[in-house]
Image: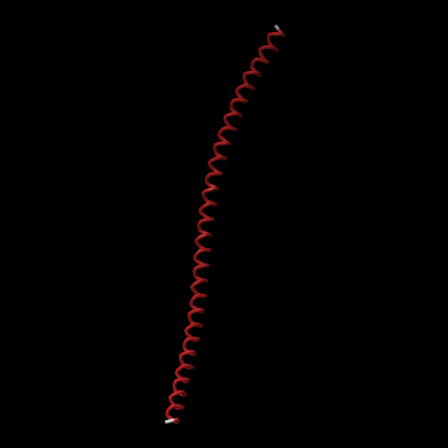
Length: 102
């Protein structure tokens, strides 16, 4: 009976050791998978952030081009107005010089 009890205890210890070993292996596998999942998540989030940043940059460039085009149009209008004013003043100057000659 003592031998049977000892044998039963040894078997129980072996089973317990096996359970602990499997639990450790499963824990290691879970940790490895969690690390891989986290790495993939970080990569996806980085790609998403990069994509959003690229879109924002393109939108900003487009808006800057629109503003620059509007500014150029305004500058061209001002230049044209100055040219017209200069032409009118040049005609007046010519008329004044001619009138003073006669």
